[in-house]
Each structure stands twice: as structure tokens, then as C-alpha cells.
Image (cartoon, rainbow, N blue to C red; front, side):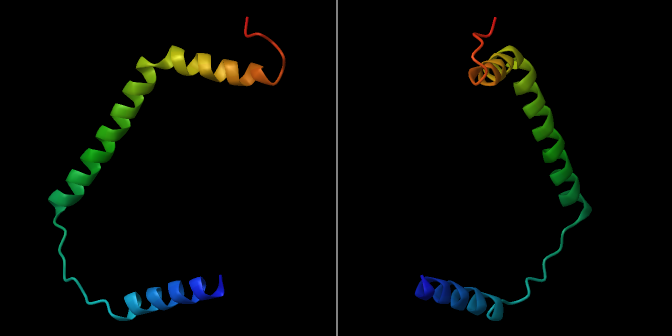
Amino acid sequence: MQKVLASVFLTVMCAALLTRPAYAYLDPGAASLLLQGLIGGIAAASAVISLNYHRFKGMLTAWKNKGSGRDGQ
């Protein structure tokens, strides 16, 4: 275990010391694209949840009643 930790530490230190600056530029269009993707992902997740609401509700009810001994009715 000590050898594994030492090799991981050595690898991380080498990676940290041997990096070069990227000189990258993110224009406002890139931020807009990221925000649009985030909003789209949230909208898609909410659509999936709303379309499968009864299935999720049944699974949660069954999970909740599993330990209590009730049969879910």
C-alpha cells in the first residue's frame, strides 16, 4: 500500500511540475453554449422525471413500505 501511495504521489507531483500554460481564450459564446447546455440538461431531466412520475412514486412507496411490513395498499 505504501508503494502505491508513493507512486501516485510521484505521478501527481510530476504532472504538476511539468505542465505548461495553455494560453486558451474562452469567448462569451462559449459561456453561452455552456449555459444553454446546462439549461437543456435540466429541462431534459425534469421531462424524464415528469413522464415517469408514477413509476418513480411506486418505487419510492414500495421502498418506504418494505421495512414497515405494510403491503403498499
